[in-house]
Length: 225
Image (cartoon, rainbow, N blue to C red; front, side, top):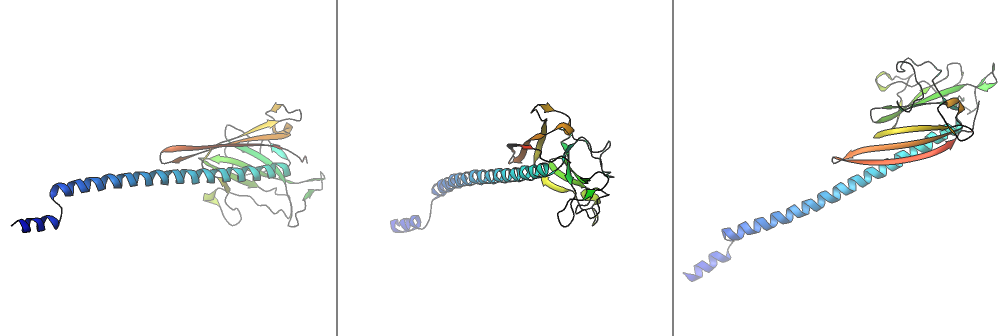
């Protein structure tokens, strides 16, 4: 009889032993899950921050190139746009809008000159915020024959002749343009601006926690047409 009892005990676990084993395994799995979740969250947030950093640097770099190449900042867009907001496009930090004049060029990268003034025709690039996205609308000068640029439109009304506005950035919180005149004094008049400071702030929600990034740069306007 004793031999049979020993055989039964050696063939499996008792109920208390099984409960203890399940509890221990549960604690171990919970610990492993917690560690896995922590590292997954950390890696995801770190990758998101890297992406935001790269995107912000690329945006600032391209904006700087356009400002340096361009003919300055305009108070208002002068080229007609049927898709413009009420009152037209106006440079304004409150609405996150800036209008940049850029010389029109032909297929050979040559300026298209207005024979009446002796100066190049200017296209206009409008940076504007919609929701948490930053877009750029292109307004091509209608009199610049051979212009390589064409007007762009909102995505909902885009077509082959009017491509969609270019989305430059996601997760935008703010993009503030501070203008300085030739004496390095603050000015609110874009026509007097000789340099521009750009302050860019991004914010992205990751796992219920905001991830923020601030970046800035200052650029001197080189051309005056």
